[in-house]
Amino acid sequence: MAIYLNDPTMKMGELITAHAELMMILQRMGITLGFGDRSVAEVCQRHGVDPGFFLLISNVYSFAQYEPTREQILSTDMTCLVPYLRNSHHYYVERQLPHIEHHLRHIAEHLPDRVGTVLRRFFEVYRTEVLDHFGHEDNTVFRHIEALQNGQCDSTYNMSKFVDNHGNLEDKLGDLVQIIFKYLPESVTSDDTVDMVYDILQLSLDLNRHSLVEEKVMVPYVLHLERSVS
Image (tube, rainbow, N blue to C red):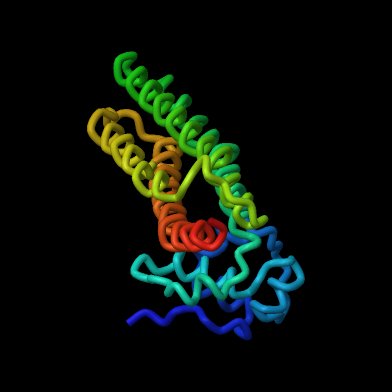
């Protein structure tokens, strides 16, 4: 049985050591390293992050089966929600995708033209889909949330549209890995290949957790705001 993260007095250094995957969310919340012996609450307060919000996201990120209650969500300060999600998008677009593309282009130079072209085109299509997906959320969904948080009734959008159209970006990354496994010649073995596959698998896992945060935290929170402001 999973032991969820509910103790804000726990030392941040010990928490991150026990759950190394949470390194991914620190920068997105503006939390820097150098914790010393400070607790989760102390570190969060130093960086303007509600400890309850940090622990809520940490649980969703660390435990796929974790289901926050309505009471937990509504009792948590959600001021950092949109900045956190925007920072996540920035990380994927500005760091992870270019890093994977760099490896892919280098590998494609050593492949038969047909295989190299398939890989490059597949990635380009995927990147376009990611940019469109995140662009919609940044410019429509998140602005809708910010308006509701400011007490404004935004009738131009509602969260039911998000639920109906929220796709999984990680699925096509799995397809890309399978293309590599299937068509990459045995003669093409390099650190670039291993690094790229590892980065793709890590990005897929990270995107899955990102989706869980949106579905398990953002959606119920915004549905509550919509009912409250309407």
